Image (cartoon, rainbow, N blue to C red; front, side, top):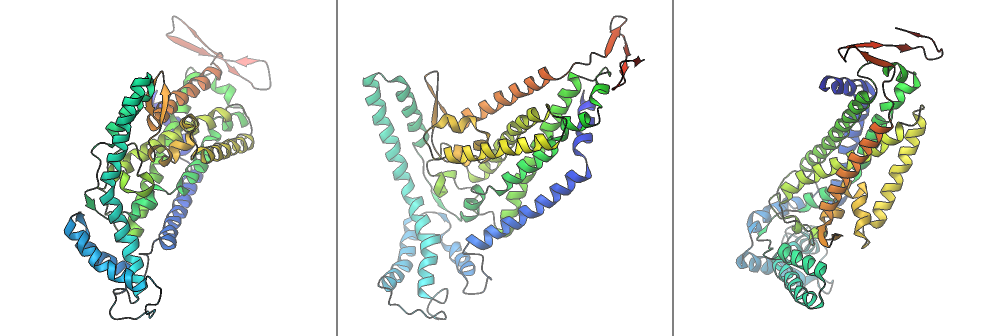
Length: 423
């Protein structure tokens, strides 16, 4: 069976066209990441002595690490005079002021504001904010116990346990991870490449009318179909993991650092209400695996569509339409309170900040289940069900009859346009 899977994988996906598209998409992805850095990061300057990049990393040596009152007081002593001098917008606007860090007093204030004061304040205050959420959840537990609402009691108990003890004790650079966790362009490339590869899984043999001949082989029929499914699954997962690794390499290459990898995920602004507490380094791994699961789920849907057609254009257009509908539906539901719509949509797994960025639950038999756990289980069940449907709907190798107690097979090969058979 393993040899058959490898044969199908090699036949379907080890083609020059697939590798060319993969290479082109990879280069496009790297250029896109570089453009993200140059377009949005204020540290993407020329690195001269008074550039933001140069000044930031000089200050970083002083303020990175454990957050202490001494560092906070030192930062405020540097920042407050700049704030007071620029509050009425009458300060000197010269760009070569020798008494400033970046050559301009407004630039100094903006640099400290964006990269030190705001994140330091957020990190320092996060513990008290998390404590407020935990205390509110504990109060809700008492209220809902009196009302006999068991589900709400369980949900608020989970929230209390999630937020109790949360803190951000260290200050670190987080800009690279902020853009990395919000980067979606490679997801589009994954879907397009998977669509291009998967469409030919069944269609190529139907176009040449080889599908009938395959059914005359002892390993034809459902065995061959199952091996195609496994081969397609391996292809989709490999493509997804490849772009996840490429994304991380690209961001670390262009941003020039992996600093901040040990920060908890809720240190990122739009993950402050995340239901998980693991580090950014660990999240990159989990995110890659969850995205691969979403790509596999989507791939099974595309595979189901492709098995009914004999022309590659129709399943490609149908798959493209389905993918567009799923993306639009997922994007429109991402900010809504209907968590089930997020759980069943593979778009949520592909861009999994929708699931990991918030603490949301679904009600399963009266028990609160975190949205990302529900989405993972649903994808596994739904993808497995689609696999079973594909195998069930596939033709059997009825043209190959076993005789002699199953020890010998006599195969009758069918001439496609005639009714006669030769053995």
